[in-house]
Length: 241
Ligand code: 1GP
Image (cartoon, rainbow, N blue to C red; front, side, top):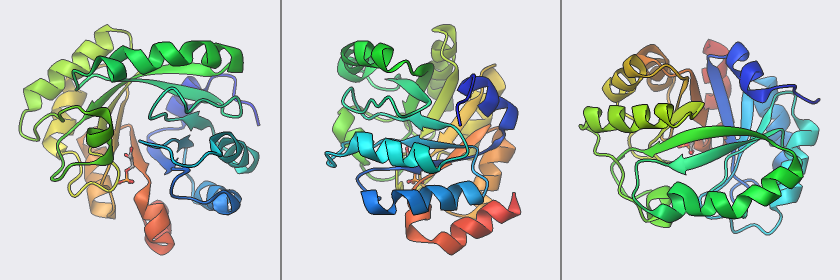
């Protein structure tokens, strides 16, 4: 299935859940089954990417996801090496919360010709890492400091800067497997101050926490670890939305 505009079809389908499939955590021979499982449970889109990427079969992973998905497949790259023509679109991320130029603009510049060649829909995303209790893979790999949990104004300022740069989404990220998800008060403050849709992810593993994120203003939440950890819990959460 091809999507004319992933950005508009996603926003029309939302609010909702996006599934994260990390090629380093889901083996290639399980991708088809995991993809069908998340689609059958009503996710609005599937993100594929990893902070590091150990698997040498990224392209095959993306192809397997695309072949089995009935919703948009979007690259969620940890770096310029995570580009594949099999996806529908790419989140063109800039790690706004950090001051590491490599993740603000360096990796992006390295990726552009391949993205162009692949003819991917490019969706610019202001990506913000929020402190979540312990050092996460994104924090370590990107070598950037997350925004402190209590500094809502700093989060709002970065989100607004992203909007003024023309980004299409703001993504508040606690980090995959985070101890604590993004504080709801911060989600609310950011949402009140921006006009573009808001994505929230990292450490969301209960219905109550996910619902509270939507209530605070998230347009999309991203679920990754819980899909690998407890199918039953994921199913139950999806059934209740
Ligand atoms: C990571 O926000 C996503 O970018 C998903 O996080 O694995 O904790 O669900 P989890």
